[in-house]
Each structure stands twice: as C-alpha cells, then as structure tokens.
Image 1 (cartoon, rainbow, N blue to C red):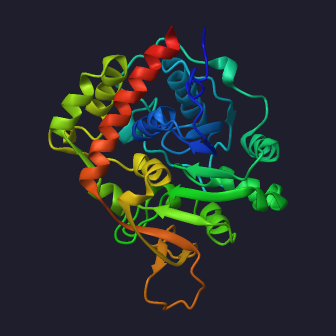
Image 2: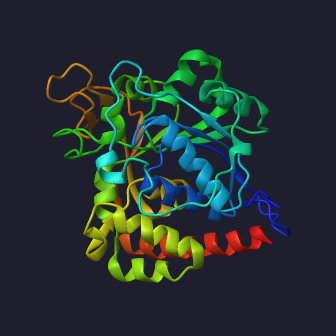
Length: 326
C-alpha cells in the first residue's frame, strides 16, 4: 500500500508546506529525496518544467522517484519550454532520460493531475491554511506563468527559494547559470515580483561538493543508496572519484537548514538583451544599479555541515522508504 512518506504514524511535528518545482535531473532527484526525508516539510505539490531534459522525461522521472520512495504527492506537468526562447536541455550531463544509470521498476502515474502546473499551483495556494513556500530548482517558467495568470496569488506565497543564478561565472554562458539562462524572461518576472526571494547560486554548488568517501557511504544505504550511487556514477562522468558538485540539493538545504549559509540581501536583476550575457544575474553588492534589495543571496556555505547533513538525510530517506513499503 502506498502512503504519504511525510505522514508516517507518530509524526506530529509541525510541517512547513511547500510546492516543489523541478526538472529531474540527477541532482534534482537527490533534492527530492532530501525533501521527502524531512520531518518538517509537507510537499503539497510537485510541478515539472522542461529544463535538464524534456518535459515528458522530467515528469516521468518525478513519478518514478515517487514510486521508488512509496510517496504519494500530487504532480502537475508544466511548461514544455521557455516563455520566449527555444529549450536547450542538459541531456549531455544527465543522459537523455534525465536519470541515466538506474533502471526504475515503475512510476506513480496515479499521482499525475489533469491540471497544468500554474493552475495546480494556484489551487494549492488557495487550499493551504497558510502561505506556501515555492522551492524552484529548475527554470522559472512555471512560476512566472503563475504570477502572470494569477497575480493576486502573490500574497499567498511566503517565499520563493531559487536554485539559480551566480555571483561569479556561469555554466551555460560565460556569466549565466543554466536555470536562469534557459528562461531569462521568466526569471525577470520572478525577480521583479516583490515576493520574498532567496537565491542559492551556481557558485554555492561549486563549493558544496560530496567527496568520494561520502559517496561510498551513501552507497551502503539500501535501495536508496544504490539508486543514488548509480545515478551519481553517470553524472558528470569521472567526478564521482574526486567530488561531486551539488546544485539543487543546496536550495533544499537552504530551505531546511538556513544556518548553513552566509546570506547578503541585495538587488539582483536579470539581463535579457545582452548578446553575450543574456540570462546573467546581476548581483549588485555595491549598489551600482541603485535598486532596492530584493533577494537574499547566498554567498557562502558551511561545507562540512552540509556534507554531514546530506549523507544523514539520504540515510533517513532510505529508512522511510522501507517503513512506507510495509
């Protein structure tokens, strides 16, 4: 019998409700596992967006992960691609399916809603007894569509935690990070919305590495350990033997463990027109743009604390998977 992994018997701890917007992707899969392992998080909805791979693949990947962990969470399929631009995936990194390296045995098709993501987000916001946090770890297309279709819903959003952007160099362009550069127009809408925002950028992921000895420890965590290890083995080929950079899990870590991070509130804008810099996050620490501070920007992370927590949470995720399967 499939049960909500977040509602196991005896757990009476208050939980923070969230919407998780994602495009799995190997590191997205790890971030979903971290969220499911948390006793303080209630995932009201997972929405999918074309990004790391196609929309069909990322949606199937979410459903496969929920089936694997015996979790029942509503899932809504979102935007196939950016608002304006053509989608260029990262299948060269994650594999064509997005989760190359592990064969899943099934998927939780019963979790898939008929509503498209912005409509499902709108309904989830209005059904919640308290404002929801959106944790967005893919391109921001779905979030931007929500804000354009239902501008009145802004008051129902407590915060948006974004894995995206960079204070330094990029990984899709010289100065642009993949999630923001995939849909800069959507990012512009979100960053200028006035909603409380937190940005956990590419440069934090570069610091938040998981070394080989920790990956070997994770490998011992039953089926979860094997799945994560097999995915990591195909992710950024060869780096599993040195250290794997964790991007999306750092956004989940910020939501769950903000004390791990050094944060500076500052003005951030998105470059749209630059021939060479479209999708660049202009993080204005020195006030050159004279904008009101609008984003809590993560500038550093306690790497050792993050590593220990990451390993522990995946161990908890496996324990809960076993309990939920009984």
